[in-house]
Image (cartoon, rainbow, N blue to C red; front, side, top):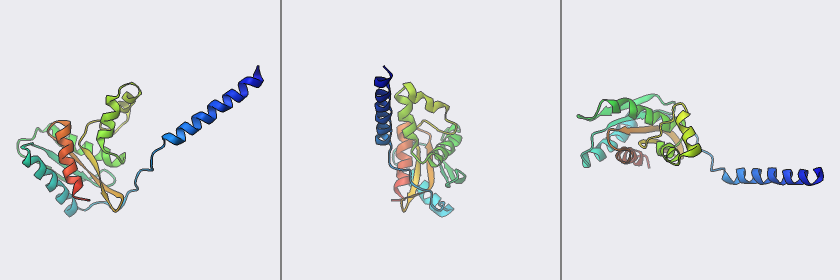
Length: 163
């Protein structure tokens, strides 16, 4: 009996290892030199322009690679709760090297995806996007004030300035 179990267990372990290797994604980009105040203002201005174009009211935060605030702007009429939310979205995006929409999508799947809600600092709401320059993360932008989609749209407009 043990002669049959050992090869079966070995086969299962090998299959699991192969599956795990196949499931791995490309490595996350490295951090570069942090975006400075002038660059952060330009990124925020692009996000604010997108918000104005669609009559959204937004709070826009830009952080450096450590998640420290570099620039912040709140449009007149934006709900005050969006101030902290925009900063936290930007921090989440830079510290976890991914857009916050990825967390939102994981939570929306339910099941084991709900574990994301217990991950400290991970904001599972669209609107936080890493800022890339030369293939490296130089900061992140966070937008809050509208729907998740509107926040993401404005943050993306700012991030697109870096391309």
